[in-house]
Image (cartoon, rainbow, N blue to C red; front, side, top):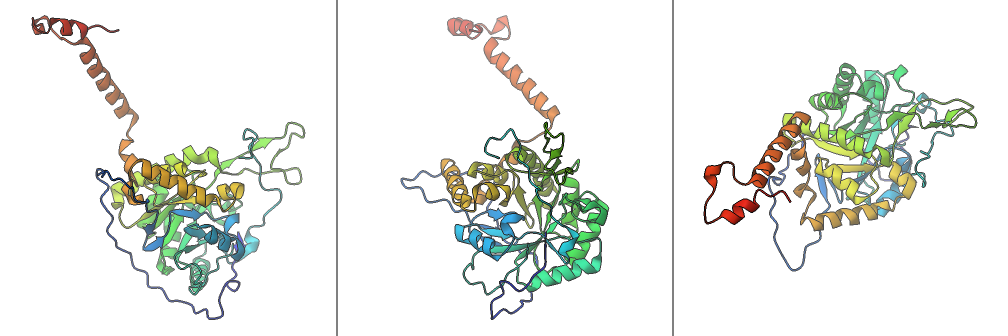
Length: 401
């Protein structure tokens, strides 16, 4: 987390812009059924998305963290082709969180080891890109209001509220401590949305039994979007030579956030839960969902979108593979779309949600399917069904091999 610095990337002609916050309305194409048209030359799929009134050339977003720490790296991200960048989380006082080193540890089973909010609306080099401020504060209404005012003065396009950071926050009622307490979350979301004039996303913690509960509270309290998930609390391992936990700082450690490819299935489940809730209770129209967790391929991104995500965030993947990974993500996502004759992201967003049900329903469906297969294999159900003309075929229908 960084302290708030509003001066580095302001242009000489920077003028603070006053925003009027209104809920954007746009018509999405229907996703009921598919129409596939054959053609000799298939058009290139369109990766662009419009989220809460913000247009992006593709759905790939740099997640809040080291890849969005300062102007230099954010510029690099836009140069490589990322649709949006969420800057590293800021608060009014950076001293609230002091990083230690080392603070990362690799999972041994993986052989390859698998901020400042700054923006000017006159940043003409990237007119089609989106910059989002990630913010976090203590349980103090005045502090939240001041922070929002200061980040909006820089000209950011949206705000992501960090209700999910697991590191050193509970004692201050910050980060995950808010995201795990729905009453606290509702109050803070009320402060934020009463002050903010740009779209607000609430970033959810996975370290909770039912992630749909806080997501619902955030949306009902005025947030336009949900982002999920942040890292999963874990102990990376114990050094069997020193008997100390890893990562180790002066001989000691503390549980921290687990990320990268291994969290992808967990993230999919959490996003699916949120998406189903949003679709059934909010109509899936004026709100957005940003999927996060273990994205390293276009296929990984497609899975989040199939579960209802509008955008897909990548943080650890950039730290491991570099900013240029976005080119691979875009190319592979386009290949997936071509294989299924999808021309836009909206053509397949949320399509896979319909195939999730309860365990009880799965049992019922399988029993019905077994009975149907038995009926086909057994052929005739009664002696009265025999016919003279079809005797041979009727006999064969009852042979199992």
